[in-house]
Amino acid sequence: MSDSGLYDDLPDVRDGLNKKERAILVCLQEAQKEFGDRSVPTITLYGRVVEKVDISQDEFQQILSRLVGGTRNSDGSRSFG
Image (cartoon, rainbow, N blue to C red):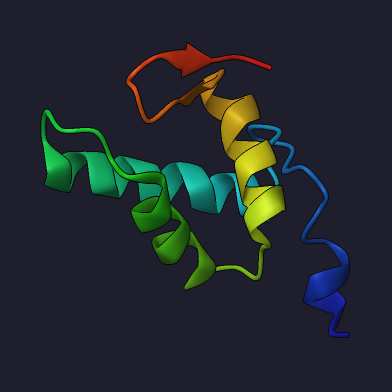
C-alpha cells in the first residue's frame, strides 16, 4: 500500500470530506450540469465515481445517502435512513 492510500479515509481539514466523499460530490456536480433539470441516475454517478476512486456499491450508496440526505425510489418517492 502506498503512503497516499493510508490517508484516503482521513477527512481534509478544509471541509471535513475524505477522498471518496469529495469524488462523489464532484462527480455529482459535473453530472448535474450535464443533465440539466433531469435527475442524475445513481448508476451513472457510480460509474463516474468508480473511475476516480476504488469504492464498492454498498459504500457508495451509504456515502451518497449521507451526503444528499436520502435516496429516491423508482416510483419517485424519497427514502431517508
